[in-house]
Length: 105
Length: 127
Image (tube, rainbow over all chains, first blue to last red; front, side, top):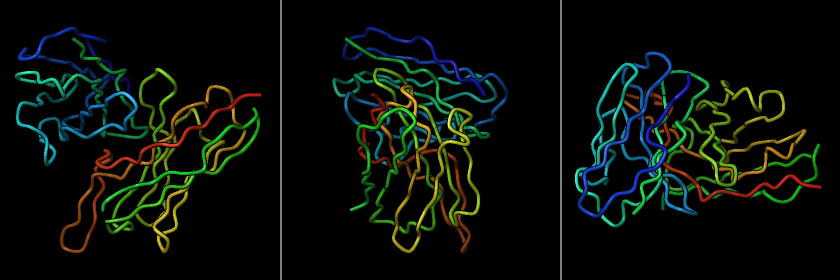
């Protein structure tokens, strides 16, 4: 299953609303996760099941979608949110990631 | 503390072999599937392989099937990845990652996503 994210990068300011999209090449129902990765660090799980917030993740992060089209929204970007975001399908093996979206100033 | 610590990376010549280890602590290791994910320099994430709770079921990405072998030692809370026939394009940071599954009424279920990651170990394939 191919996962396509857009945009590949986005320039925003603190306080902005950010929306990242992820499209699957076939129906994956709600089997989608989102990760955040900062430079030199391991990824961190943000959302699973397309819309369930992982414990400890701020509520400004939200996810939606099902089937083939999904979105990650950051309602009001904070300085610590500048990072690269990846989607990942958990529907079937081989598990696959999107190409990533870099959120930068 | 709940953590994963990888080791075993290094510089290896093309065609060579390496074994990566991932020591788990702070959780019941044999209740969770485990995975390996890599990231080439400046590139995105690539899932490589996963192994079931018992170790009886394994899955691989096409890019490494037949060259890499995943295994686990539940008595020592350790995950392994044997890398053989290494190529320059295998140069990457290799992460082990715990499945974000759960247990209910004595049965554990996998979710095929990753809720705990190690810090990564670097593999460089070069002559």
